[in-house]
Every structure is written in structure tokens, then in C-alpha cells.
Image 1: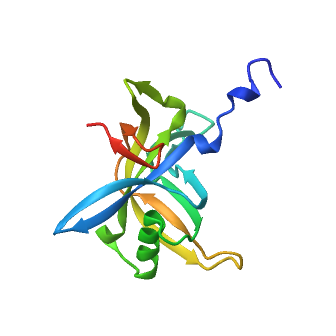
Image 2 (image 1 turned 30 degrees about the horizontal axis):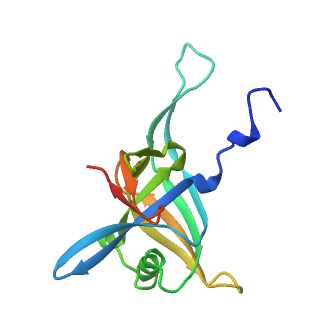
Length: 174
């Protein structure tokens, strides 16, 4: 190992938490609660860049530029009863919801940015709308599993979030 890396400084996967916007309708109005995504065995992001490649007549090699992105998060989870996030995704899977019925907000919080200010815990996060794209379910004999992709349905926004329940739910700082 080189001299500038210290194993104690290695960032663990568990230090990047994802929160899912669970919609709840009551009395004709819908509220969104950003709830921690628990029970996931995979939440793997892909940027899926679009490339513009060209070769100029006076050059011997190509030039490549990135012209856009189509981010996606591949997911897989074990089904647990009474988990609002999993129940919502399962509802989209089993009822084959489409369009806006299958669109949710996911906020990814980087716990390496956590600060405490006057008793308030806050961190930097990335917020984006995603379409829930179901793929399969029941692929394991040990537990009922579901898998699919969250595909970007809007641009990413850097936000500050706070928590008052040890990162079970978050609130966006306006």
C-alpha cells in the first residue's frame, strides 16, 4: 500500500444511505415521507453516459466527449412485512403501474458530510426523481426477493437534509 492511504479512512458502503419518497394519501392530499431504504441487498448505481465520438481528417485518433447521462440504480431486496418503502415498490411491481404512478424521489445521503449544529444533524445529499422499473420477483428459495432498476426521470439536485430519528427518515432543508 502506498503512503497516502490509511485503512481507517476507507469509506464504508453503509456510509451512503438512500431514502425513498413514500407517498401517503389522506383526506385527498398526498404527503411524502423520505424513509430509509432498508432490506436492499443491492443498490448499485450506473451513470450510462452518452458519447459523441468523431475523428477529424487531420488527426489519427478519435475524440470522445460525453454528451449526456442516463443514470440508473439497479436494486434487489428481500421482502419484509410492514416496510413502507418495500410495500410501495412491491405495489408498483405487482400492479404493473406506469407513468407517474411509478415515479418516486430518491435521496442519497453522504454520511461523510454529517455536521451537528445546535443539536441539529444535517448532511449533504443528492435528490432525483426516478421511474421504478420492475424486473423480477421470487428469484430466491430462501426469501421472497424483488429486483429492478430505478431510472433517472429528472435532473439531480444537491440538497441539505436533516434527521431527528437517527437516519430513519429525513427532511429537506428549504
